View 1 (cartoon, one colour):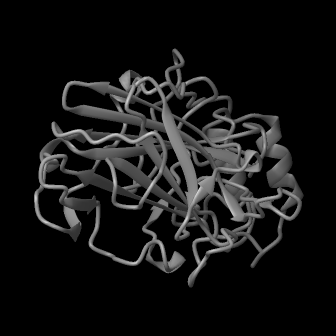
View 2: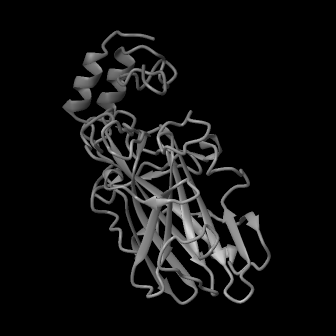
Length: 308
């Protein structure tokens, strides 16, 4: 059974919507869009607008380079980070210019579903910088926390990192490098190589720019032996949340901001906000490889006259 309780080949019906059976209505829709494409940026391809506000736009291999330069994020859907999450006093962050965006990518564009990667960009306006050489104490410096879970239904504590992961990234005093750790934990440790995590950051005046590539897991084992990668596909919901931390170097006050007021993200996987993956594909593009062709026809034929 697929996540959305529909057969892959069920793309239409008498009312123009999926009707839980694969029949001639689906073939008609496939023929209508035959050989049309929706490859991002390609000449002659249709632009398929995302229908879900707050969703995560799909990208293609090579579109995002994790280097701390956010110039390729101009067209992304930015989410404001303006909700006070934890308060010790002084507030240096300009919340009108603090935000994050997310894109997703499949490893195999020719598969209906495939393991994949989330790309996360965070921009923080904070003119009062406190950077440290390592993670030190949880409230000792400016940093960002990114929470991810592949299983949207996951709840409860995740101190073994299986249900969800908390990636914490900070800029070192040289401003030429970053540190990163995996949480949640009272003493977070380095991100294991098995996570295939990448991060970079840059400083431009008051602006702190962070960029990350994060593998998505249904279940994560730090050794990598028992990890289960999420099979990503359009319309799937996954957990992604961002918290921005700010330290004041004169008063030593510490504050945190989030995009939402749901607290306890480090203690409960159920507190991580959900986002819908947008495919950017035509409805007849069953395997979501940006083109309607014989590969989609084969998937529909495999479901022929099946019903749910």
